[in-house]
Length: 68
Image: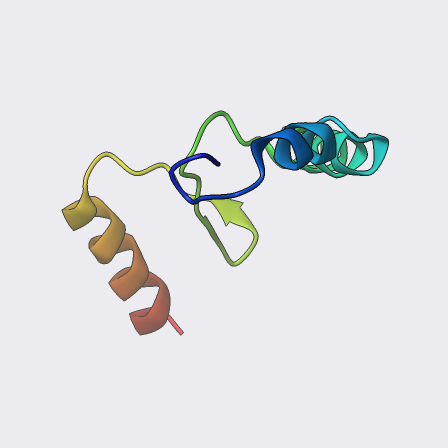
């Protein structure tokens, strides 16, 4: 926040607000329900992609579009 020249007091207060805490908790719950185990996570056609490398990611994308 400081390097972005934001008001750090306001930033800290807002970050700890009930509204922001709820958004983060809701996102965490949604990720847990979807099987997200870390970031980044990618989903393709509702399936959590297991990616070992960028090449693997590209291969899975190609395969998903050529199998239609």
